[in-house]
Length: 519
Image (cartoon, rainbow, N blue to C red):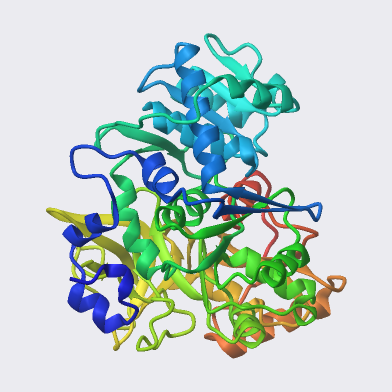
């Protein structure tokens, strides 16, 4: 019987997929499994490259499966010698690097729980997460180490050159034996530093269900050269950008340092990556940079996640790379549920859509009473799990052909004079103006209409009344006459979540704290 990785068409995915067949891609079973073994140790073959580190400063660094296997084994022995036990938490706040992979995979080899943390967190964000997960050890840089000062029972390790050299005293092999249902990773969703997002606790067997997104969301197949520029502190960068491809023995590219669109384009050319999965923001920044025509590429499959991609950027991707960027939609809590099937020649992906459900998946757009919405009607996206529907807190609609479309978060709905409007659709219309770089739309109070739309715009030209009218007229012409921003504010930048998405909540909170001008 052929493996699921040998099928590339949409029709074959529907015909041959079953949850049981995902287990055929791994060494482990339902009783015993270890992510570090599945992703690293079983793929050691000479000096085959596991990770290409693309540094923002222009350097490239290659790490082999063998090198990561040896480093992580030695680190597991080190942890055991220091009294770290299975089930203890090991927090890792590092950019993608030799030390990052050593620490994350080494902790999991031991049976400890790896906790990746975003490197740009300030003291409040770090303290909230460390208080929540109570790690025995924090692995970070000398610059970040003081931010953890004063945390009781917490050791801080800076894996500098001396430390790495000292690991040579430990054996480069470690027998990774863990229960499949043992917790392997705490994954914090992105959020503000004042509101602690819930830590999702992933077991070692989570790597199996992850293959649904890998096979059909990013289109991963053995032989790909795969690049994901998202931080491995977040679900996209860690699970989809790191663990899934490594589990298939695929060479990955990881981006370290401050993001630069032209640096990414150069890496695509230099290393002939064939598959990329990025945030919509990454593609948008490549478009705005104007550098794409200067670089060649070998891309065959492109996907994105995190937020919808605007029409101008989608057109740029298709023109520049000869392929549509296909959506992959899900949440950290429920996993990926809607995909664009990259690499499936028989799947006619609709630009602007979220695609269709993963094989065997059930997704519906439901109204307030839990009934399915007819095509074209906006409701809440819900996913069937075991014995009931789970709310995603996202809005969407389905078309007559069964494609799903995103309509924003449930709290991003704007209701004005009885009309229900989507912030996402309004932003997409604004972004079609050639001088607009970024846009965000929120509802602000209005005595007459209840709410009106206020747009925040980052542009390539100074903002004035004439420019604001251009934006309003553009939205009127593309959407309904009532769906335009009655207020337009020009800004130098928009607030972002740590994952790079526009943070409309910050904008709403700012507006709530100050009186709104009359519409």
